[in-house]
Amino acid sequence: MSTETLSAPPARWTGLLPLWRQTPLSFRIGLIVLVLHLLVAATGPFWAPYGFSQMGTGHPLSGMDWAHPFGVDQLGRDIFSRVVHGSHIVILLSLSGTLLGLVVGAVLGLLSGYVGGWVDEILQRLLEALISIPFLVLALIAIAAAGPELSGNPVLIVLVVALVYAPRIARMARSVAVDIATRDYVTVARLRGENAWSVMRRELLPNATSVLLVEFALRAGYAPVLIGSLGFLGFGLRPPTPEWGLMISENRALIMITPITVLGPGLALASLVVGLNLFTEGLARILGRTVKLGVQ
Picture 1 (cartoon, rainbow, N blue to C red):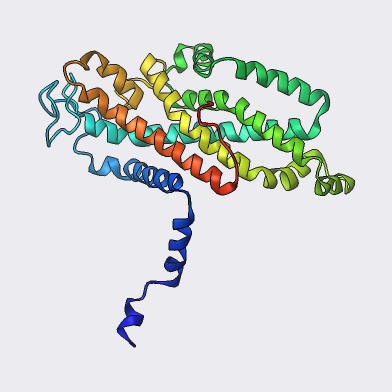
Picture 2 (cartoon, rainbow, N blue to C red; picture 1 turned 90 degrees about the vertical axis):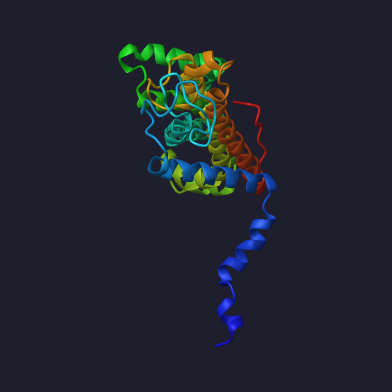
């Protein structure tokens, strides 16, 4: 056996490289950023220098150094370790809430667009009423309605994210369903006697997958901002949970003394959002869709 044969890379990898180069630059950059965040979220708790609530790790309000890249807060907690520990919390809440919103929004939107009539009218008026409320105001209303006993509950945060984004996803799903419902294969399915749920599952959903996939990526890109905003305002997770928005709120009074304690979680949140938005833009170009990244 020749040395050329031994050193040759597997055929599957040589085939993937041209495919990778053909993808949009925004997709590649966004995917790399997301992979890094996911790696930190999955492995961070095992290599973080300190626990997220461990106090006395350094001199309080000390600046950045090799032992504390993001400084130390007023309780002596290492900010870098807290940012690392908080990555899986932010990502898990964002993806869980967006996924739940996708499921609810897709079902409502496809049902509304396919059935039409009074069902469509009622659902659309309800969805428009929810969409007309600013997303942060709607989230605060939902948290206030849940009561103080559920305040800070991660499940409540997931439900709030789903409530905010489900109407927007449903509106997009309905527009796709209205178009698909006029196709010949849907008419054939109706003539076969299939019920609405069967047509939605077999005909509408597979043909709306690309749109819903882009919608999921788009909303997931804004979910960390929503969760961080709630944490900053004191309506998110409770201390000492290392949620990035909550960390910014806790250290905002110290920004003139040790600005890195605010910049650390702020940069982590910004990089995640930028990575998700770049990934969404590239994914939309691959799937031949258009997205409006300024619309939440």
